[in-house]
Image (cartoon, rainbow, N blue to C red; front, side, top):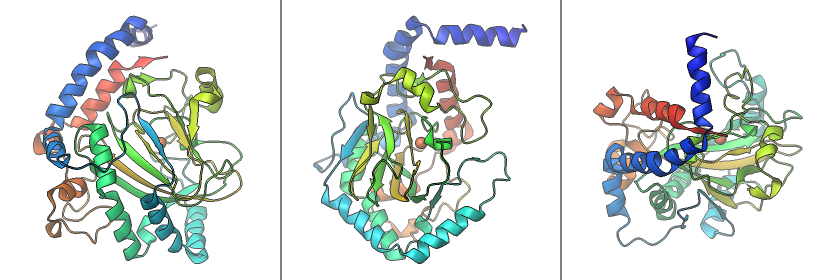
Length: 347
Ligand SMILES: [Fe+2]
């Protein structure tokens, strides 16, 4: 055994130790969290304080939760209906054709993405306007702000069509966390009705107190991009039983707020029917989902919106804020991901 292997094995042993668990939970995380909120996200912290002033319209996610199921919210049902109305058979066929002709010849990219496609860019402008308005609504921004403790940036607006494509779960249909940073809040909103046959999002109900610093040991072996750090359904069932797992199942408009960085989840495996889902991801400038290469004067998910036209400082931050020069220089996203890699507890 060489030195590298030896150190790796020793480190793995330490990371499975209960003392390590308590160190991470009661010493490391409180310290890390303080720095993340007050230093790394200093600007977002200030904005959060101002934004919360006198505003009351939000969903409360308790301190010991990182998920919340929303049923029968008229605003959510309305946005689902608006998207649904813009979709016809011609559009669906166009998306399916794109999917069937997609090639997976770049080995550095997700090799398992043949079952879903984002078609938000193909929606008519008036619907895109409504979706962006929804993403910037007080209810969503305030819910994300209260959960994150800092004002968020929008790092994803997608409307996915998922189709039945294989007889077994693969890629993001396996259990995983989105490894892009420390904390986030996503809203997954059912546009089509969802039942067990068209790929519900499944998630662990309880929050793990270690958040991103908790990982399941047995991940897919020799995985290609798209399946790295993912856990098969079989293995996962050795850790958690059926009653500990929640699902986004329900009528159009049913939604779930979930922190996809801290929480194990899987979804989108359609057995027999298609599924359409809106997803908006509220993150922070330090997460590794960047749009650095994109024209900074345009909102990357909807380039019709120009930075110079947005007067509201909160909306401007949510759509256009990127890392400052210092954090760009030190590559803060890589540092955080590295710390997670070093300091997590494995079970
Ligand atoms: Fe995910």
